[in-house]
Length: 125
Image (cartoon, rainbow, N blue to C red; front, side, top):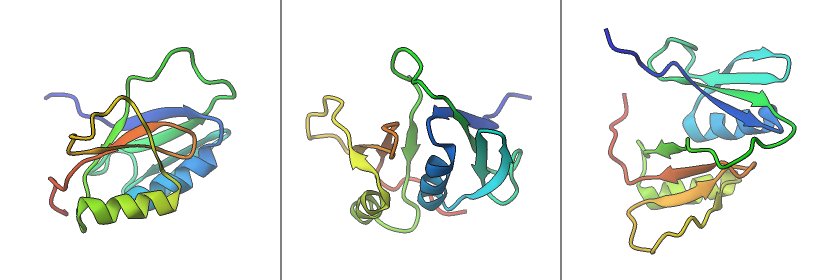
C-alpha cells in the first residue's frame, strides 16, 4: 500500500487565528488542541477523507522560505466568487512574480503563508 498525506503542519505565531481562518476557508472544524497547537479537519478528524492541518506555535519564523503551500479548488462557486470570499475572510494578494496570465491567484493567509486559488477542478464529495 502506498502512503497518503495524513496532516499538513504549519508553524505560526497564532494557531487559533489561523485555525479560524482555514476552518472558514475549507469548511473544516477544530478536531483537537494541545498546548500551543490546534488541529483542524473534516469532522472525522485525523485519518478521515481529507488530511488535517496542524498549526503549531513558533515565535520566530523558521529560516528560509517554506516550500510548502496549499492549492485550493472552489467546489461550489466560480473562481472569482471564491476569490472575493477569501479576501473578505482576511486573505490578501501576494506577489511572487506572476505575469498576470496565470489561471490562478496567489494569496496569503493572515500570517503571510502563501496559497493558490485555482480554477474549479474538483467536484464536491
